[in-house]
Picture (cartoon, rainbow, N blue to C red):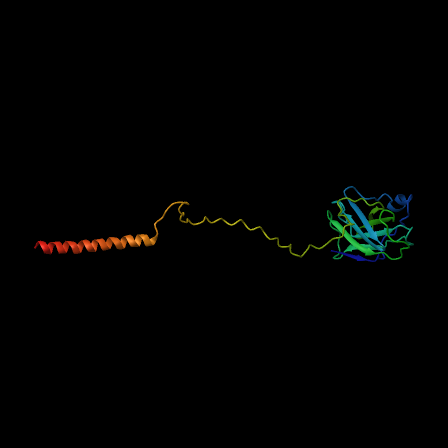
Length: 213
């Protein structure tokens, strides 16, 4: 949505002196309005700036970044930010951009290096000048944005339920110790003896009938 470019011929100029004369010399009564805010962080000659525009700032077409004269020999903006498709910046959202600053004599140090911004309309008229970041509704610029992880979570083995116990099949109860049980040979002998008695009795009956006749 946005493009970073070098300052153009129409950019405003404003010496960003170090304290104590910074407010009168740079802001000139055009400080950040209530409900808007901005912040910055830096490392070496790399800077990241975030701006949040309130609903009333609907004509902002350019954001200019200035660095204090203690670390750079210039009174002009060090970089400029415009919407890549032209027009004006949206309100009510975080506008975050980064850039490289050339000509630094020392590295950027958040909290020590003086940084300011101008918010201008399409005619390069300054609407806001701010030398003191007021972080209102901004994301934490010190936290790098990381892409969502594409790795799948590890598969965790789920515990298997306890198996249902199978009741044992019924088994015959052996005789108690000391009891007597007939053996199969004894039973067979008794059966044979009985058959023999029946046969002998039959022969006797037949013989006694013949004698009586």
